[in-house]
Image 1 (cartoon, rainbow, N blue to C red):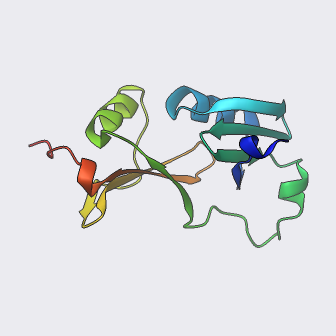
Image 2: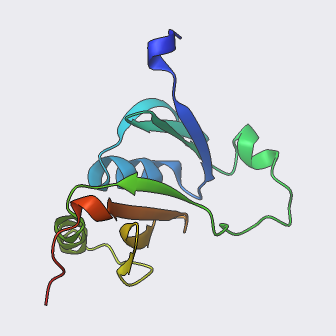
Image 3: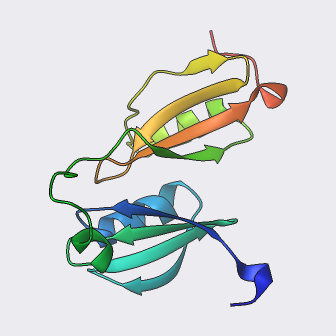
Length: 133
């Protein structure tokens, strides 16, 4: 791999690799890089390479038995217009795991992939659009 193609990789353990690939590519702007489904696939968005490891993958097999549920960690995706993204994803039938939260750094909301892994959609404060009333 050339240095121009280096990614930051995050591994998510998923129950269904096909469902996870469909979720990330259809709703969050990722594209499929490689697939060895049903064991493994990886999807890419910018410099982020998301490793989707099914139950038969080496990544899942290396995970301790007591780590059976998703953690509180999450990937953080910056969006230009959070309100538009929320409307688009709700129209696609997705449910959010949190309410919209605003803070000094910006606004965010959480959703989960089909396996329950969290995704934070974040709009920085300098780019915030007015809240809907």
